[in-house]
Image (cartoon, rainbow, N blue to C red):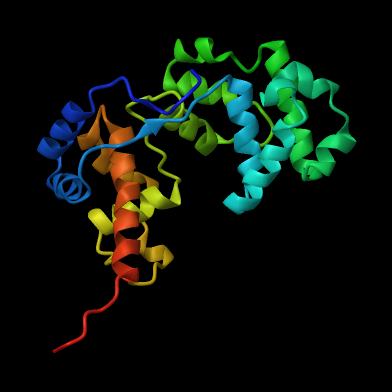
Length: 233
């Protein structure tokens, strides 16, 4: 589970073909974006993955990367594990940049990992998506969205629909709703969970793939907004 990013194990070509056949709007988006290019992030353990997720919460990516790097330097071989975290003093972790809330979350993660409440990565792979989420949200600071991101980007599950994700909601509005690239987004533009779930019946069993394309719809809209306007001759 370590090393370079890996391709997903499911048939991405088949997924795109079936999504295109089931949903004309999704077909147009897939044609605009191109081939499915999600790569799984290398993962040492459930603990390591959730530690990173906790550190990145509510922080700019650059700041989070810096804190994450400083925290990893505290571990032997720079690989986070629950046993070594328990031996690290609060002062060292706070000096690395952790807030009191994140420190408490990491302590809880370590305790639950060592007790078995947080399953090992091999054990997670034997569980259903629903079981994985139910176990991971027991950890302080871990919600359903974080569990779903682990399912999609680290475990490579094909049928996860993060309906609370802003990018998925915005991508849905751009692809299926009436939102146009370059226009300001207001709450009324974003679909409700019920609307997304109803449309997503067409996307089964490839909701992770559909979600990835909805995120790319946001990227396309951002590129269109930043593109220079050609001058008239």
